[in-house]
Image (cartoon, rainbow, N blue to C red; front, side):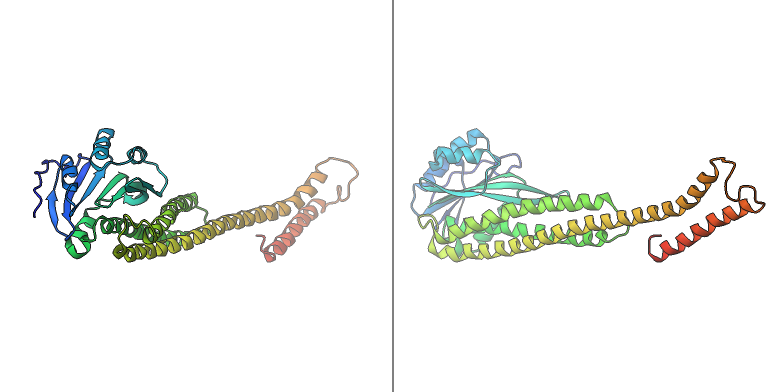
Length: 339
């Protein structure tokens, strides 16, 4: 029997509307159509249907409506309304509440956001905060595979998690390219403050990426092994596949972290070496200048009884002595690579 669905509002997919998608499906993998928020509870009354709702930065009124339609826990609603939650997975009554970190490249800079998800036996709600790409591609992927979509909300959640991890990979590759470019500049003879600034900024972004990846592994592993009331056994291999993808990104980020730390150490060492070379040159020239300065200062004391003071060749001999000693010191310091 086909479910009669009310017509959705014309602005369901409007850019400023926090409701980005609200779709009903049946457990045969068929898309029944877009529905309104008021129709959610009506659709869920039928045992052979489930709902996938996507929101972007909803307000308190919308979250209250969401709680009414799905019967969500007060604490979970409070957490989902506010961003800046730590990544986690918790059971609240008849639903799982999951918080994940997302990443997106905006205007050549990396920004991080959050996705909160409610997983029930017959619904999936995704709530995006901050920098996060839409999950329309994940939804389209599921709808192209009705046999997999028939597995219900847990498979839809897999598609969302897979999309999030897939967004990690190009960001990690971008970090690697930046690191390769900076490694070439580290060994330049001239110190550049911009290089160390970029190294520090890259280190900061990499730490943020690792803070997103590490909890993702724990969450996906838990979904693959536990919560049988919400996750069907047929979907567990798919969660393990997401875990493997996250592991590869984590290993890549760990390697980059070590290389980045080494690059920063090498950069500082190169700066110290450059400073030492400059100090050596200054010390060498100071030693050369010190000899004639000493001799000239002695003869500038204007005492009457001094060696060679009344000699005819006293002045040329003194200048020659200054020049000779200075030349000898220059040769010795040049051979010692101090000049």
